Image (cartoon, rainbow, N blue to C red):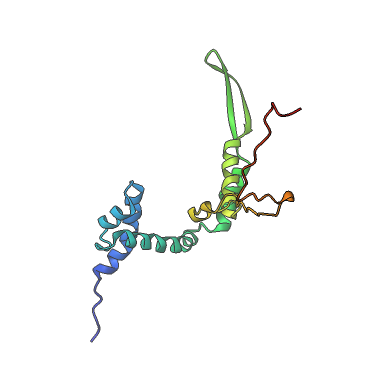
Length: 166
């Protein structure tokens, strides 16, 4: 006897929950609130939401490739044309257009270059732990000084008063 295929509620829910989580995050909810709304773990919603986001990050490149938006396609179809973007400037006098010129769209070109550098990994990571490590390390070395004076325990030195000088 053949088994009946039943649609499992959990399998349907598992495919819809990440999309609902992203939707709630885009609407401005915190990860914890979004996870609670989308029926993730009631005991640890923040951890469940973080894990769901990590799973989505791992699946994103596969999804883009399946939709025909792989790295090569994105660069050839969208990024390269932006690097040569142009815009039309209109000049008017007393409300009537007198002239128009095609000029480079430097704003679009700058954004395309920024995107290229970011995708290429040219920018340093913005990890908070790495940000804390910035700074200057100062190393004090106590070297014996001529005359036997020590900088860590300075002796009280009396300077001569101006009256006693000749």
